[in-house]
Length: 233
Image (tube, rainbow, N blue to C red; front, side, top):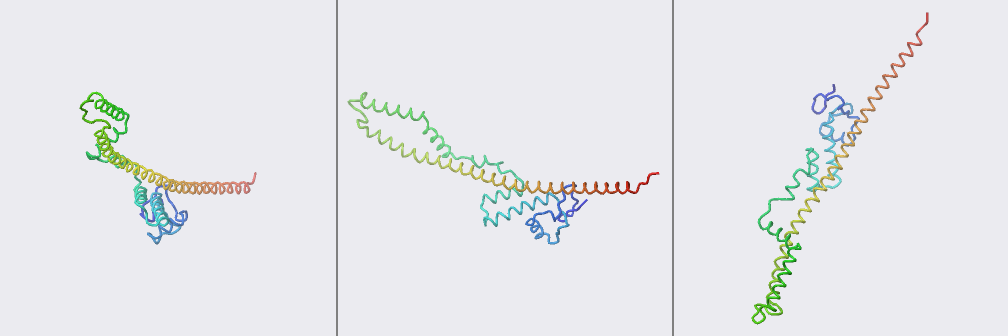
């Protein structure tokens, strides 16, 4: 059983990766940390995957320069093999203050048919009351200046409340977009790592098949020699 050059521990059967089979960039990265590592030395598949992830991180740093905050989180998730979508709901729906809750409820009510019907009913009752029921002593005669003042104040208060709610919704949408981007980026990098694993398995399988064929050819050659040397009585 082969031993890993890095950990000096036995490598399970079928998980040994020889230095000659490693991609040049990953091989150079291993040599930077372990200068004595050579083409004939072996490492385990788990160690190979670690250096693959580290190699992808270095490639992204060279391509983009300094990694952005989102890219750093993706790289950490790949290194730790963690799931990015575990706590997304906690980030999207944090603990709300009383003012934020009131703003959401008011904005939700202000954009409903219930509010529109109640509002028009109030206007009609106000105008009928001052134009017909209290025609001699109306508290807000035509053209309903007090009503216009109330409506102006309502619009002035309602507008910033709706904007507060919209700002919170935009923040939630931005968090969702960031998570979608991180998940897509992590999936792309994981696919690259998976492709590397498949390539390794194919190379390992082809080497085993070639070895089996060589043994079979040797066996056939021995049989042919025995047939040639056979002399009938």
